[in-house]
Image 1 (cartoon, one colour):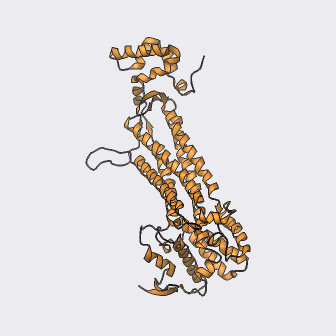
Image 2 (cartoon, one colour):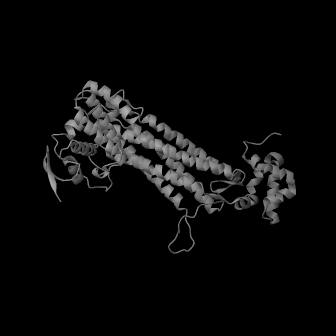
Image 3 (cartoon, rainbow, N blue to C red):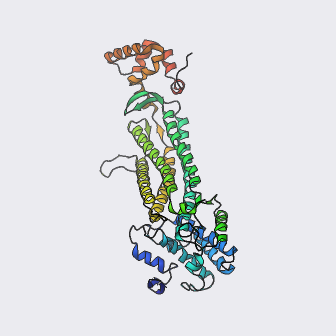
Length: 458
């Protein structure tokens, strides 16, 4: 293998000849061989949006010439389109508050720009990663800004996919509207409901998640671009600081604004904890709903799709694998929320050293939820209902007499239950029909009456 030699303030280091990254990235590869997971590529693409905006601002202010700026902008666009993904190999867990990621981006963009200008990779006289690509910037203002951009784009996608899941539950709500069944509290039989109502509760919970996730974008719009190292903008021209946020809005198409106190946006990352709490709430709903569906499947009131063999030793066994995967995904998101909270709270003074872990965990959670919502929605669409089993449980449950209390009173209902228990019969509904008449029983247990709010005084 052929190598080139590059220099930095610490000395010389060999870099793979064909690599677009340089010495700073190589040091990161040597230092942080930890998780085996690369920096989320959505963060890399968002970083290139930031670099593009910075380059355009520097170009407009004549701080970079048009030829050099054009090459850097073209390089940014290529990465944004998804090219050169293999040139960003740094480990997701890295020290330095994200400096390794920033320098990886700077070096790849610089070397690609050099190539565009007809030069040889590594000839930084044409385009320098720090002097040109990183001009008027710091890791401390570009990394949080890029993370917020990546987060906003993923929150938008997640909101759309949650809407798909909500729609699947709403379809089942209508499909199961007239299927009467027994409700359950504390894993014991309770008063009658309909299967449609049960699925309505699922869809309402998911609807809240969709709205909360949609609103997360508002919490991510304040950025600290232009603040450079600590939020004061030291070493950057004032004209650049005011221009770069405008340029970033144009480049991204997002409603971003620079924080009123940029020092605050650099030092404090509580907005990430806030939005992580929102997706944790969504994960909690997914966990609860998945468990409920598994119980309904166990009770045979619903039937889940058969997707794969469930056992290597028990022939014919089929497991609720999608729901188990949803639950595991939700557990991971909930765990990531704690990591994000810890990473945020452990920042010190004017910097958060643990941005790489925070960013990796947040984007991982969003990626997981984006995928699992579509998988879950697809499964919900093919859930079937076992109306006969629902009716069997209903007809045998002593709790159905609760619906008759406004008509016969508690004492009479208790008396009928004792009589039914002594009779040895199994179908309570038939027994009540014999005792109270078909018209009253059918009217009270009509699905419309069961799902209406309270009973009519008429």
